[in-house]
Length: 151
Image 1 (cartoon, helix red, strand yellow):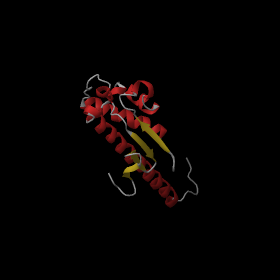
Image 2 (tube, helix red, strand yellow):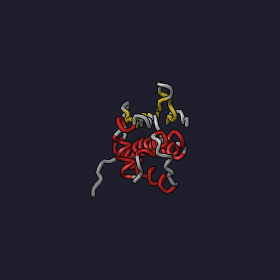
Image 3 (tube, helix red, strand yellow):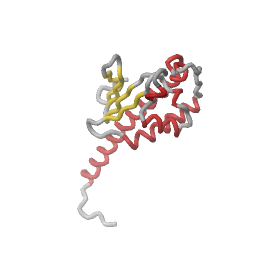
Image 4 (cartoon, rainbow, N blue to C red):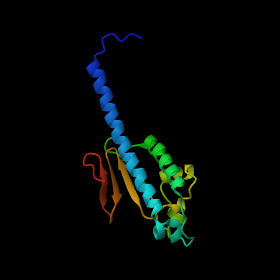
C-alpha cells in the first residue's frame, strides 16, 4: 500500500475526532443502560407486574448485566444523530395490556430474556446524541449531559 501525499496531522486529527465522537456516544449509552438497570432493580411497587396484581418479579444481578449488554448493543444501532432523539417509554400496570411499551424496549427485553412486566412503570426517556432527558412532571429533565457532566 502506497500512502503518497497523506499528511500525518490531518490523519491524526480525523482519528481524534472520531474517538471523541465514539467516546461521547459510549458515555450516553452507558449512562442510559445504567439508569434503566437501576430502575428495574429498584422498581418494587412501581414495577408493572406488581401494579397488575401479579407480584414483584425479582431480577438478578446477572440478568441485569445481560440486560445492560443487550441494551448497549441495541441502542448503538439506533443511536440518534445531531439533534434527533430516540424515545424509550413504559406505561403503567393499569394500561399495560392496551398500551404496553415502545418497540425498542420490547426488543431489548426479548433479547435479554426478561419479561416486559419487570420494567418500572411510567418512565419516559429521550436519548439524544449528547444528553439524556426523562419525563419529570410532564417536563423534560436532563439527567445526563456530556457537556456539563451532570449525572
